Image (tube, rainbow, N blue to C red; front, side):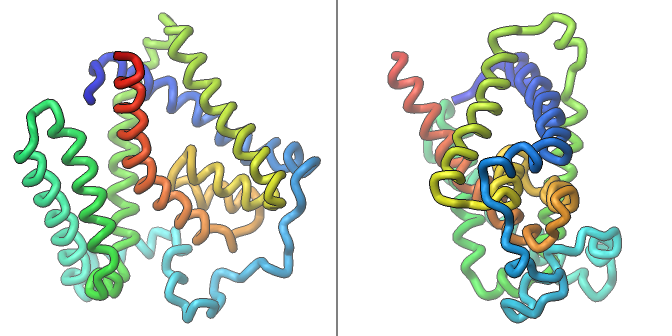
Length: 251
């Protein structure tokens, strides 16, 4: 399923603008507002960043300093980074290879699903799990992707606003936030966890430290990363499934 390039760029521009407004809301007014009907975070559950919980396996994930990314080009980590990129290329080759077995109209969808599935499958291998540079290497590539998406933003589109498309994305964003908050109220989820998971779903991985810092609760950085990464995986499957379902219902 492929959309027109112009529509994609328009949606991307609107999404970036509305997501920026959402981020400003989350780091400023959201916590006081939602704290009125969601319970407070239990401070006794807050863990320091250097906590030994889990054997320190995830301590490196919370390191967002420039030092963590400098490690990617250090001599002692060359083999690790090369291995990470090698596994990424392997997933890419699997995805592209499988797409050749299907009609051209399905090649993009098959490639996305196959790469996602291959990456998910490789994550269970001990050899991959032991590659500690994999997270920051992946984060660097995500940041490159975000930069590329940012360069696609066309602010001239705002002068000729597509009201229907803009309102659709805005209502989707607000509706998702309200539905998420309602479910958190129902299942007695605290405000901080709600906001970090909401940011994970809407803003993705790179913005988790920003939101955690605004909440003054950096113990939620690693859970936020986990939610965002799972969102990447499930989003690919569910997004494609929903697209096909809508096309089937409208045909």
